[in-house]
Length: 377
Image (cartoon, rainbow, N blue to C red; front, side, top):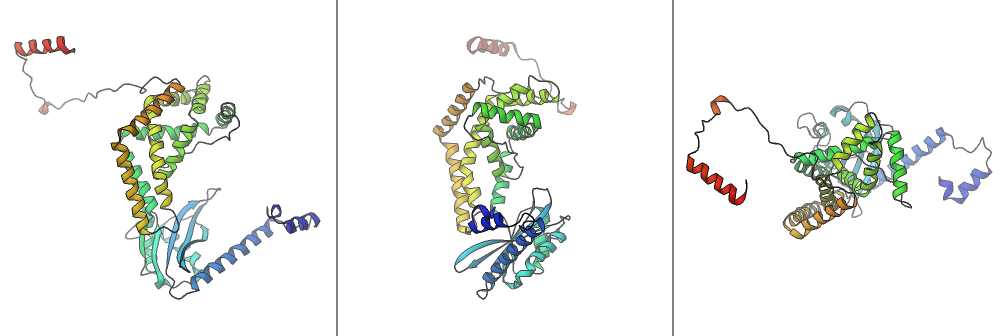
């Protein structure tokens, strides 16, 4: 890879014999280890350039491409008037309990030789293993870093609030279940190949896109999932219609998803949430900025609240969403509002709660008939 950009490296690779290019996996790993050591040494130098350099510890659980559980650790500090965030370690761990995660974090920080008294904060997510008041990671690390204050990631908190608020409506929860089921359907080998083929047919000259799965606690992941579905709505419907003509389990899944998506209700929610995500993405991404301050966080969240309130109160914005929905319905020949009509629940009443209804007097029955003749039943 480096030879593409460095003529000298390219010349040496071309001139060296085939069995002496020094590009074996062992040598590559050694070079990467040396590069990591040099970076850690530079970060350590910056942390000790000035006396009393305060810092915060950021950590999160993650998985690599091979699905191994890792603990990612970063250091946030001030150097020459600039806020810096530096990744200092990714350690594999098979134990995701608080004690094991805390031990990995301390192991990563050990080479930096930091003064525990200068640590002013922990930046973790709100999972119980990290935030627990008795045995959470921040409480265990507090024994080593006594002055640190635990702060739940502001971007993650905003994600949780928005996700929780949207789940109040059963229709919205169902909608995102459909989005995730659609992603699962398109990951099948034969289905995925056909989906890509249809994209090339209906979007010539444009790059093929992959659908994304939404996470229950990541509002930003919902944004990507909805945006992709809205962009590829025609190709998705065409793929589902194709497999609805097949047989077996694929036909059943395709029929179900096609019925759910070919409704005005689904298209309207798709358009509405795409608009909501366009308004919120600047805040969710801005809160992840390495140089953002607390006052900037407050301004971002207050601005998002104001924008959402304006959207809810402005009739013209709502009309635009409805117009866009109608245009998509005409384009894709969608005529139904929902899959099925509403049905009133008929729950058996308890005997003690039943009230005896006396027959209505004749004049009341006559009045009811008269109103029906005037305004209809």
